[in-house]
Structures are given as structure tokens and as C-alpha cells.
Length: 221
Image (cartoon, rainbow, N blue to C red; front, side):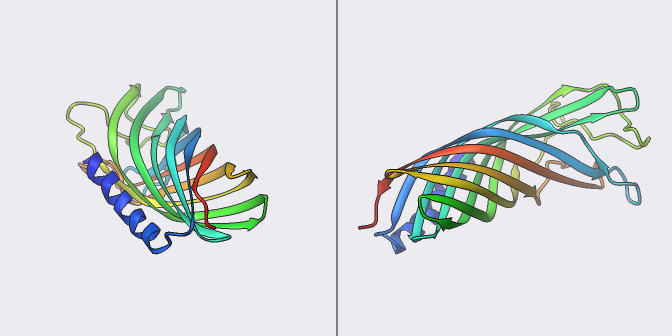
């Protein structure tokens, strides 16, 4: 499954590169921290409940292709952790973490020359690698409704496919032929891991603060 997703993403990006064979291409690495949470309703007509954040590291491989001086596309293969930490009225915490292989395919727009501001936006998709329950202390949240269910137990069987939208803003600096970037990125999930309808409504969001270093491998003449 993972191999098929990576292969499909590479084929899509490869076709774009074929169209613009003389454009600039960079390959690099991206590393930083992520923070995710869930908002949900246990049953219809109940208040929306937002959980606490789960923080972790994220890293990935980046391929960036410029089709003009200030516009291009970017493909990533990224490892990232989503999850939630939910407290009850006594301060007990339920925490679950889900590790994903995530593949964003982004359109990039740059403003400036050596020192640049950028905007990135596009879809992402991926697959669940593992799920684990860090702690489980209560079955009802502070509103008195059912808390978020577990996802790391043997019979939980979470859905593996993820898809959503990713957007980011940041700054970058050219270092000769290479580039260093600092970025803030937001992701929203349309898919959800729940398979057994134990939760009426659920929305995962993710925030990332990262640094990337890109090496120019093909430079437009």
C-alpha cells in the first residue's frame, strides 16, 4: 500500500517535470515539530468538543520544481504524527497517537529574489503506519458525553487512508544554488480513522513549524 502511494505521487510529479524539462529542480529534507488535535461530537445535537494537542516531530523528503521564476510545484514524502489528548473534570488524560506516511502535492508561489516570502497550497494523501493509545483513564469527557474512543487496541481497526488540504506560508533564503526555508503549515483532514461510527462527527487538524534545506540538482540555463 505504501509503495503504491509513493509510486503514484512520483508518477504525477514526473509528468509535470517532463513538461518543463528545462526548469529548476531542487531536492532536500524537511524537519520540524507538529501539533495536532481533534474536534468532535459524540452524538448528534451535542456541543462540539475540542481535545488537547499532541506534539511530535515530523520529517520528510522534498522535491521542488520551478516552472517559472516565482512559481512551481512541490512533492513531499513525510512522516507525521496525528492524535489527541483529552482531559476529564479530574484532569485525567486519554491520549492516542497515529503515525502517518503523508504525501502533500503543493503549488508554490514566491515573492522576492534572494530573500523570499512564499505561499504553498494543495492536497495531501497518505496511509496510516501505526496507532497506539498512550493512556486511557476515563470514558466520558468534561461535558458528560462519551470521550474519544481508542485506536491502538487489537479490535479498533482504524481506517488507513488519509486525505485533506495543506497550506503554508514561510520565508526562504538563497545560499548560492541551494535554499533554506522556514515555514508554518496547516493541514485539515477530510478523512478520519473511525471505522465503527463510535463518533458522530470528527475533524483532525495539524500545525507544523519546520525548516527545510534544498539542494539544486537541475538549474535552468
